Image (cartoon, rainbow, N blue to C red; front, side):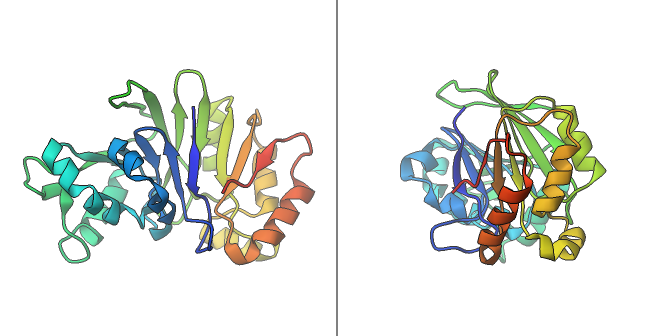
Length: 257
């Protein structure tokens, strides 16, 4: 299963976007500023967007993405499906696609044939993602701890098992979820702050290298590979150094870009 990290930063950087992971050809996990790197061909193939939560760095490109594809979607009488927790969809409908901040594409060009479809999901209830290429994925949302309603996703193509945590702090909820997932080929997880901002990480429900190490030590099985994301740009070098010092030497990990 191919995963392209279009954006994996925790802020604005010249060569990095915020959270967006493309699973070609038809699926996107989060739609932060990194989603602006999608080519025209990739945009045309896209039919499903999975959102972890409604924070701006994870949804910033969504309104423009739908607008860019409006004509093509309308001509094909096709809708882009956005999967998220009910609370997240309510936030999007009330505060973004409300006719004031942005057009309500869930009712355009008409209520009968909209170009945007909101699909509520439930923790631990898997759903299937498919497209014209017959490449089918199964996604399972799982609970994590953040300051707003948030989920991660386990995604499988029948062979490879990948989990994308979304934003999360160190909590029994997150640890329990990851252990329930079982063996993973890859875990994509955040590490927003350096260790000296531990108090901020606690209240903001984010991870530091030390907190990530504690989380990994609490897992029954370590993933085969770890992608560490959401580093705050001004702390990137410090976080990377602390990760090198604290993560197990046998663990394969990288900072995707």
